Length: 371
Image (tube, rainbow, N blue to C red):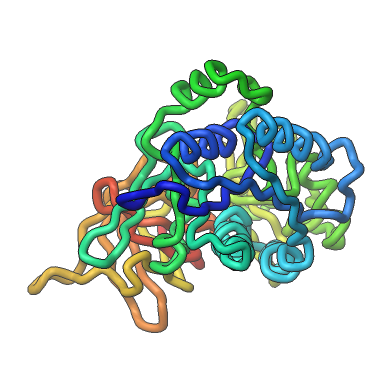
C-alpha cells in the first residue's frame, strides 16, 4: 500500500456494509488521510421496500462519524444506467445471463469512482473487496483474497493495470470473521449487518418481477429433449441454465421424482428445454468458448514453447471451486477452455475467470459450450 502512507489522501467507497467500514478504519490506522464516498447509482424505485439506499446512507454516515472521517455522497445513476444496466438488459433480452457485478466494478467502482476521487486530489481508492494486489517490477497482479469463502477476485477480473495500481483492498488479507471482530471491537454501528447478495447497486428483490418491468414477456413452450411439451415459459429472458425453481412444472412428470432443470434455450423457436436430474448430459460441458477477453497483465498468458495450451484453473461462476483446464487463446479477444472434468450448467453471458495458483489472470464472457 505504499512505503509511507502518512497522510496520503485516499478515498474509500463506503457502502454502509461492514467490509468497507473496516477498510476505512484500517487505512486510517495506517496513517492515510481517509475520505469516505457513498455512491448512489440506482434511482428508478429507490423508495421501494427492496432498494432503499436510505438505510445504507445512514449506516455509512454513522460509520464515518465513529471513525472521524468526512463522507461525501455522489450520484452515478446516469453512468450506471448507461454503462451497466443497459448492457445488463441487452444480454437478458438476447437470452444470456450476464453478471452485472463484473461490469459494475470495471465501469463504476473503478472508473467513475476513481475519476471522482482523482478530482478530489487522491491518487488511490479503496473498497471492501476480498482480494489483494501485488506490485512487482512495475506491474500489478490481482490475487485471491485470503478468505477462500469470501474471495471476490472473480468480480474484479476485468480491471486494468491502471485501475489495479490505483486500488487498495484492506480486508483482502483478512478472514470475514476477523473483519467482524474488528468492527465489534471498535464499536462500528453496522458490525452485525448482514452481507448484501442482490444485484450490484440495485439490491435484493423478486428478480423475475423486477426484470419484467424492463423486458416484455414472450410465452412459449417448455419441452423435454425428446420433444414433449411439459409446460409454458413466460419468456426466455427470465430463465437461466441450471435453474430449478420457478419452472411451474412439478417434479414427477415421468415418475422418477427427479427435479427439472433448465438445460437449453432455443431463441429462434422461443423454446425452453428442461431435463430431469442434476447430472443430465445436457447440463454438462467439457469445453467452452469465450469472447471479450480481458487480461490483468494487458496481454494474454503465454503458451509455453512446444505446447498447444496452458494449464490453469477456471471458474465459470462465482460460487464454484476451481476446475483444472487447458487454455487455448484465439484471435480477436477470444479463447477456448477444455476442462479435465465436465462442468455443470456453463452459462452464456457469465464470466469464465482464469487463475494461476492464487493469481487471477483475467477472463472473458462465455458464448458457448460443447458436451
